[in-house]
Image 1 (cartoon, rainbow, N blue to C red):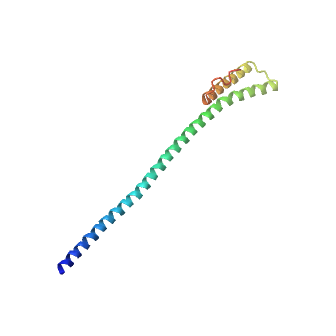
Image 2: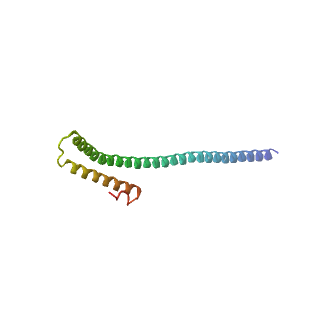
Image 3: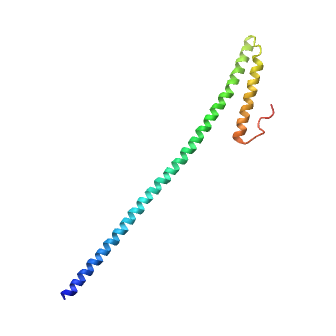
Length: 128
């Protein structure tokens, strides 16, 4: 009978060992799946961050172009305003009026070209 008990004991040890190995494999796989999900989530967040940074860069570059365009518009406006104020003050303005009109018209043309490029309206502002 002791031979039967030894076989039973050995079979129980083998079964427990197999259970432990199988359990350890399942635990390791679960840990791997959980960590892999975290890594995938992190990469998705990095991709979203890259997308947002790219969009912000595009917007900032567009705003920079808008500001530069405003400068080119406001300088002729200020020149025209200065000529108008000089004329109202009674000062002699010589050829300043012609230059002011030309710079205002050039600025109008530039802003119309800029707006038509931005909006795709090629016929915008053609009637001067």
